[in-house]
Image 1 (cartoon, rainbow, N blue to C red):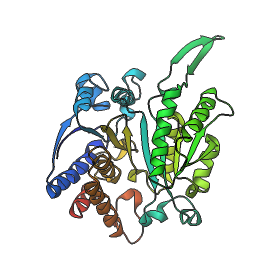
Image 2 (cartoon, rainbow, N blue to C red):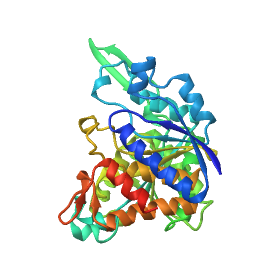
Image 3 (cartoon, one colour):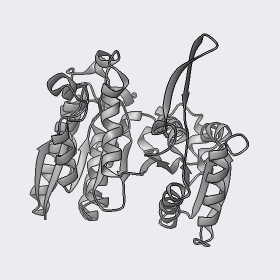
Image 4 (cartoon, helix red, strand yellow):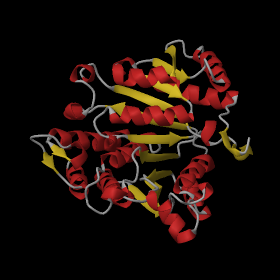
Length: 356
């Protein structure tokens, strides 16, 4: 196959981990006879520095015409003082909206080799951690109306969390269809005891569930869910929730797996073109030190192969190479433990390529 990939190298450690993902894709292309054409699409702080915009129009067009998009991480303290419409994170929000990417899928699965790195008690980890957070991505408070006014002589700010029936319905379908390929359980997370948007969320998800009689549906308030993720994560299969809640819960879920540097994610819309990225930030404190963990970025590339390109065998090869490297005792600094060999970002990438 010939596929064009829009590459967003990002900020901080972004370019370093992206290099390793591209090396892995090159190894896949060489082994399986594919051609991957990579086109740079500047976004984030680097784009602000060069073009004055977090997402230049040309970059968005590159992403819209590519077969898929691979993103590392954007942002950093350097741009914290920018106006909110010029911050690096605004580029990411505009990209999701511009590409119509309404569903974000983040797996939370612990590698057996990293069970000692989890902050949870061994007795909890041994029950198993293997679930998926399906997060609505272009609605809710992040995309609602934001206003700052004066009230009673002081500043007053509000952010509107709004959802329509069709926005809830389409993400619910994603969750139920994901569950059908797993253990057939969906937990819908909301705050229906307080929020009207959550009351609508619960009603619509319940209606959609009738179309999936083979899937068990449960409901949980977001505060309880946050507690249950650390108390007994084995109870979850697929969690579906709105944008803000999903942002928080998926980050929590990633940390219990041992290292946030291990977790990939996919953002999809109606078609096969997607946005694939690790869930961690740009980590500017270790940028340029060859200390970053590239595995989340590499596994994001594997998700792209599987979900956007239909290359299941190739995706398996990448994931198996990562598993083999971990079984061989190879670690980056964030997941280092006794008896293992610590590698830098480049060396870990090279080790994974050698195992493909």
